[in-house]
Amino acid sequence: MAIVIIAVALYRVATGKPLLPCGSSDPVTLAADPSISEEIGQLVADAGDDGCMSIEVESTSTGAMLRRLADREELPDLWVPTSSVQSDRVSRDSQLPFETVLNSVASTPVVLAVKNGEPSVRSWTEALGTPGTIVDDVADSGVADGAMLAAAAEREKGLVSTEQVQQSLAVLAQGQRPSNEGLVDQLAKTGGVAVVTEQELAARGEQNEADGIHTQVPGTGANYLSYPLVVSAQDPGRRDDVRKAAQNLADKATDEEFANTLAESGFRTADRAPLDGEAGVGETERLVVRDSGVLDEAVREWRLMSMPTNSLALVDSSGSMGLEVPSLGTTRMGMMVQTLTRGVEYFSGSSALGLWAFNAADPTRTEPYVEIQPLGRLSGPSASGVQGTYRDDLVSGLASLPEHVGGATELYSTVLSAYRSVLDSYDPNAINTIMVFSDGANDAAETIGRDQFFAQLREMQDPQRPVKVVTIGVLDDVDPTVLAEIADATGGSSHISRTPEEIPQVFAAAIADRSTPT
Image (cartoon, rainbow, N blue to C red; front, side):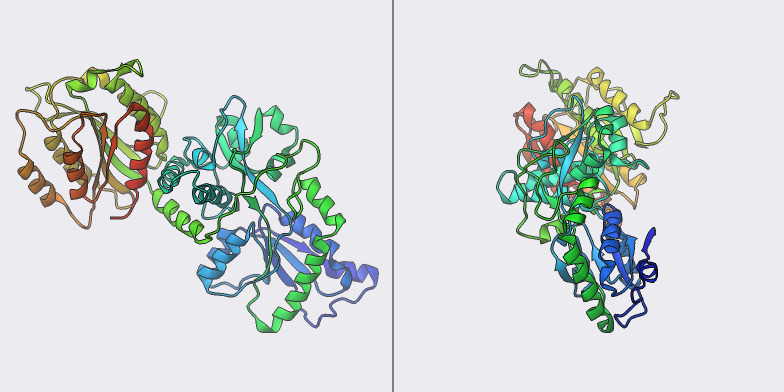
């Protein structure tokens, strides 16, 4: 852990002032979020004129604080997290009382960094649900907290539904790809959208323009990081001295000198007044969540949704999938290829996906399906021998689906075969699922009956190796009853898209639902 020592004691010696008149030989420890630790260090140095005690400032994330608790390590005396939401979370998890001395040392809105040419984002829910959006680890980052709280505020205001927020979190969680670069540097190379702060972009100055990056705030507003000053010391013998040191810092934090320090680094003062000139985003509506527990719920959902998936996609390739969709100028299968190609981006590189096309077109075929791509880890090398990843193989396989259209829908036998396949390749560290995409019912002439199918499906199920079937029905002539029955029998979920426009949203909803516990 990086530690910045503010040697107030040396300053006392140099100026002839008393060394430690507060009656304590131990310095006060202050943990500050890495985004503001340097500015807090300057504040400590500026506030050292009362001759009280030395203060050591350490750069510490919320995740590091939680790890200290888990390891039963002593907490710092003072803490400056990014928001009261984080200090409340740590206090609640540890069941230790914290005391807020100053509600806000500084502030900055959470914003979007966007490469030139990217479209405007209307809401935080939309931003989080856009494939390719980059965000820090939710369990460790106040910036990620800010974005999730903004989406929750949109839900509280009735601008979006609970389901839409959950779908966005699922897309975001599954789509994250690890990188050793900072978010803005990563964005400059890959394009897309990144969740950052106004301060981070303001501090980069002209480099943003050179990288083709501009700032965006959704029309709904922004959540602000507030950086409270919190007493976290638990030793009763130290708390009075710690409070005095904290109050001294709180008094100094309102001075013009510290305001200038903040402005030089791109921070706003506690009153959230806009930065001077064109350095920031100006006046923005503040999004506030009334129910502070929503973040804990969202973080729990995030952790579950972030689990890799081991999933086999079954795509109906019966003759009806060759029908035209006039509004799109393509066939049903063409529509499905477009949706699933984009959907591949919803999954992290640690996920394993496979692709089958199923129909009863070829009576000489021993199986009711064609394996387009076997289960494989998306970040793994291409199986084709050319440069690229298995994700590229899957996209190529999707493009070939129109070649397999024809015949009737042999749903039952395909689901049973897929269930056996996923059980054989079961990954205990992933969510194991089968995703079925179909526009019809089980109408093949030579197939097992409904009762026999469900009997065999239930017989294969293993509580120690749960496999969910998630079904996605497409357009008006789909049979929702049988798809729902298959999903219910495995603890999965069923979704119906009645129009082409609904399909991407329904697919996102299916991703969210397949992440929920059985």
